[in-house]
View 1 (cartoon, rainbow, N blue to C red):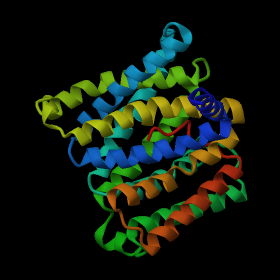
View 2 (tube, rainbow, N blue to C red):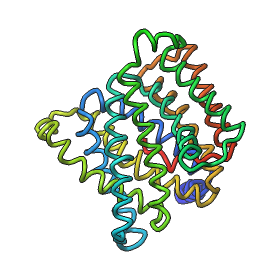
View 3 (cartoon, helix red, strand yellow):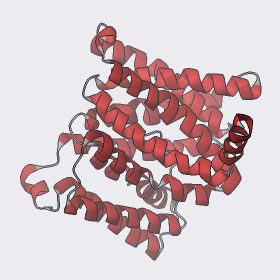
View 4 (tube, one colour):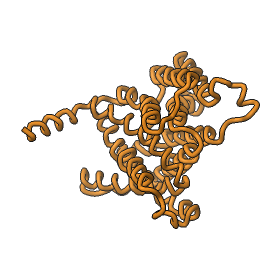
Length: 312
């Protein structure tokens, strides 16, 4: 009986839509974990520990699949290093710094701007055609972000400025948009999974010195069990496991269908933020979130590029 049960579970897990639907859930709960971590661990140290766990996990996955880790060529190495700096070091510093002062839900909505910003960069830098859907998508997405950041009182930006936490997350959006565009170059000759693996390895190495200077690693044994469990979740589950599922989903369903599920990440983070952290959802926040999601949907429908993949 148990054998039949496990066989049925295994068969269900092989279904592409089930695998890809898990990805936004894992990314969403990773942002919630980031909020927990940021309240206890400084940003560079948190990022270093997260990507140390991620790098080890991904190395094991790649070795199991390929028998070894292929070494990149010198020209690939330069691009992968740039990807690591923008998508791992700078993005995660901004992420953990921002999550120290704003909620996971709020951060998730701002991060949802990433595909819109990527598309906007593509239009500005690479002269890609801007359709009416894209223009409306950008307007909706940024209007929604302003509502979320200001609580529906846009005039307060002029009077009080933007919260430092919001600025850090906006900085993270720019870092990830840059990472996505660089990642396209990296993935011309390197598989997506291998590119992520090397970005995590290089990212962890690059983060070692800033993390050491930040804490001298003297407090490692003082961090709570909750912080360590959330670090494991962000590194092993939120990066390694989630990316494997994502790329398998892309292989089975195609990038456009997979992107629809990835865009639900913010909804997932809001849900888990309410459930696990007791975060409050106000009416302006809900309206702003809806506008951002509409904007992202219109941007993707316009033919605009999406994230390489979030990690968040």
